[in-house]
Image (cartoon, rainbow, N blue to C red; front, side, top):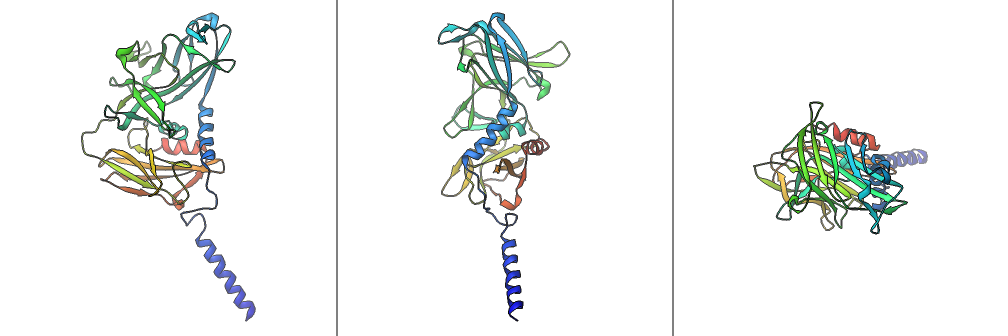
Length: 325
């Protein structure tokens, strides 16, 4: 009888433990730090970074990226502490064209409206360019030019040039360049091969974007998202994919520690729009994520549980996002 009692007690204990595993509860034993989450984002950015060297003696130099973007840089315009640069110069370059890459690098497409609110942008490409000499930052004294194959996204005459600004929370906010203030801007032109090319002119290092605002005439709303216990703005993120707009990604860019909810707090999400809302975090060097198909309703709250998440590699997450409609 004693043996039977202990066997029953053991079976009960195992059943109770099984019902509270990571697969069935809303919390887990491992919860990532903000440092761990930022590390996999940084790793994704490093994976996408292309490195070039140019020689100052050559003056104007054209570099060609992995996706066929041509980058014109005049090395004679580069200075270090006000002095002309000689010898080899290191160029760091990143190009981002799809929602999967935007998510893993946290380079979303949220642009600043004239009111100061943020709204969804449709991107013709996000670009980071920087120049250093022996690790020292160089200054740019003239314009750079990008020639971007429009087929990488879609030809669109409404595109303008945007400057990326990293805010205090680590979000990248896009501010439209004032084309009246200098020789900057974007032009869509035919190219000799029969396609079309964006010609982008700008005069500063850092993040640049070819964009336009997403157009929607109907009512808009604010949405909220709840995430599993232990997750917050520091160690996770929530994104919004507009179906049919793969070269764009919105972000729920604020978090209320009292409610535990992420928010798109400007009320700019179109009501009735088919979307996918995405929860993403880190898990022992990999990505943990969940993707929900939703149709936006007014003032909706969308909730993620740990049981809905999947653990996978950066490549698997990028592929999952890029496979969305």
